[in-house]
Structure formats: structure tokens, C-alpha cells
Length: 372
Image 1 (cartoon, one colour):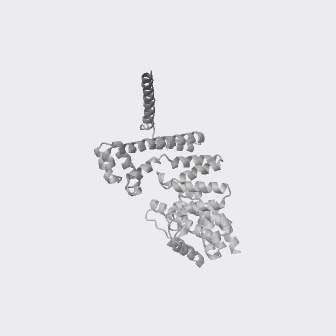
Image 2 (spheres, rainbow, N blue to C red):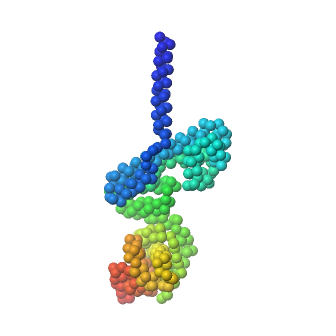
Image 3 (tube, rainbow, N blue to C red):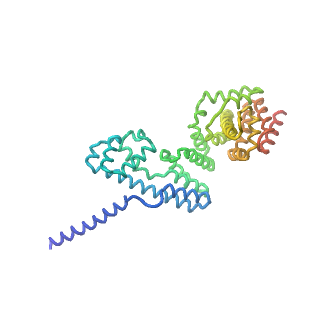
């Protein structure tokens, strides 16, 4: 009886072990179906069509598919360590890759090369173990969290939205498009403004400007403002002639901070933001005009505005990014900093050549009030 019992027990545990093993193998089988990035693209399309519920569902599906891919890749890399020769090769990728190729670990080689191509060998300090750790955590999908955060913000769920955006921001290194970082920061700043969290609002906008080499260059910023503070009749001409900034990603942050600092009475900070933002805007407009007009070169600010007004897309870009308002704010902020000659010269140009009639009239009214 005892012998039969032990035979039965052995068979029972063998069957259980088989199913557990099979389940484990299935859990790490290479995922099939649509790629995670394609699912997220579908989510973005749903978002653009205002199908927010479907967009969240698809974004979560994309996250799940990315997790499945990460689990499979982690399993593939881990399995290579069962081979003695692979273990003996050590931890450096340059030494372990030839062995993996020789042993026909094709999937492992493909996974390693994919990550090296994306991040470089130095990102992992040349080590297999560090690459494996990166792959272990590669279930994180910041683009999906960013999209979900935007949707919850639109639906008024600001706390939940911020949680997703924080998660996306904490994993910036995993972004496929690094510049999405700035979109995340702008969304976080907007939520902070909605919640009257002024400190966090300022902090997030300054985080955008942290990567702007011109804004962080104290010497450049001092020189920029110095021309305005000279307060001479030719200061406007010199200002727009001498300086350029190609960091157009910073424009939105500079526009918002100019208004923020103006509202709290920090006129000098407001002036610096308006000055750099205006230079960046002029640089952007100048680049577009050079592409469209034969032999175009910048001569003066009035001429640039006149030519910009000929193109509806430039005018619309200026409206969408509050550029025409920014030029007006530069003049107003200059007035607050006792630079009335500069302000009057700028307002005179804006009152004649601003592409938008609203800001043209507003500039004319402000000019008249200063002259009184």
C-alpha cells in the first residue's frame, strides 16, 4: 500500500510540476500580435478623435504588451546564463556577444544589439548585467502614461492625471522621443496652475528652461537685457539685430513665466523672459522666411513683421504660441523697468506692423498712454 501511495504521490507531483512548468513557459513565450508602439498609435488616434475612454483602454493595452515583451526579453537573456561557456565569458558585452553568436542565441544577440543601438554601449558601462537590469525594468512605458495623464486632465481628474505624468517624468530615459519631456513638463505646469500651486508651476516651467543654454548663460542674459536698459532710440534695432536663439521649445515657458513674474511684481525676471522669448520667436520666423523668400536676410524688426504677415501659417503659429502678445508684453515689461524710450520705439513698430489687428491696436493705445 505504501509503495502504491508513493507512486501515486510521485505521479501527482509530476503532473503538477508539468503544468506549472508549462504555465511558466507560456508566460515567457514571445508575445504575438500588434507591437506596443502600434497600439499606442491607435490610442493617440482615439485621443485625437476625442474618444477618451477608448484611448485610455488602448494605452493600457500598450503598457501591458510592453510588459509582456520585457518579460520575454528578460527571460531570453536569463536563459543564456545556463550555458557554461557564456557564464565563463564574463560580464562585458564585447566579450559575451561573440560567445552568444557562436552558440546561436540569436534572440539574445538581437535584444542586446537593439539596446546598444538605442542607448550606446557606455550607457550600460559595457556590462551585460546592467543591460539585463535595464531590460528587466523595460515594462515602463512613459509615452503611454503621458497620454493617459493628458486624458485625465481633460476630464478634470487632476490628481490622477498628475500621478501618471509624474510616472512618465520619472522615466524620461525610456522615452522614444526625448523632447516629449517638455510636453510632460508643460502638462504638469498647467495642472499646477489649475490647482493654484504657484511654486510648482514656476518650478516646472524653469525645468523646461534648464536645458536652454542661453537662459542658463548669465553673461548672455545680462547682455541681452543691457541693450534694453540702455534705453536709447536705436536699442530696439540693435536688440533684434544682434541676438538669436534657436531654442524654440523654450518659447512657451518664457511666455508663461513673463506673465507669471509680471503678475507677482518681479519686473526684472519678467523682462529677461520676454527678451529671450522674443529673440527665439524672431529667430524662428527668420528661418521660415529664409526658406520661402529668395535672398532674404534680416534687416530690421519692422521688415520681418511685414513679411511674416504675408503667410497665414506664420500668423497662425504666432497666435497659437502667443508670439504677437509676447512682443507687446516685451514693450509693457520694458515700461515697468523704466525703459520708456525702448518701449515707445517697440510699440511704434508694433502699432504699424503687427500681423494681428488686435495687438496692433493694443500697441497703439499703449503707445498713446505712455506719450501722455
